[in-house]
Length: 109
Image 1 (cartoon, rainbow, N blue to C red):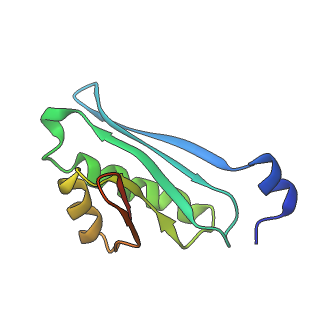
Image 2 (image 1 turned 120 degrees about the horizontal axis):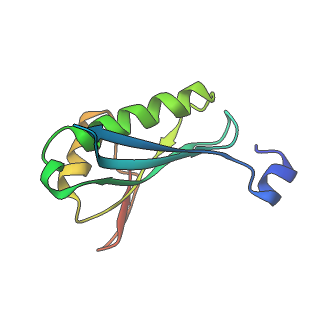
Image 3 (image 1 turned 180 degrees about the vertical axis):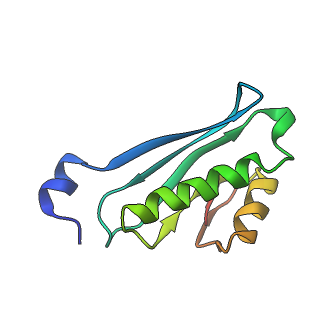
């Protein structure tokens, strides 16, 4: 369990991850985690449209996983829009599985 004060005040470690290609930002993601017992989260995964079919989103998720694991958390959640099929497939190829799906909104993997 997360300590009471940490839950109450929402203390968490949050980091922004940025992907840069040829000096330009081509994607970003946010990671957050509180304690090793709580699941970390990778959110706001976004790649510039022309780089979406490349490995940018997959690399952002991989970097997010490393950051969260450095903090000691072993479980990781990734809420993603259900219309982002390429990202969902990339997450599945990294070993994630769907745990919660809300029609037309998001999938938590």
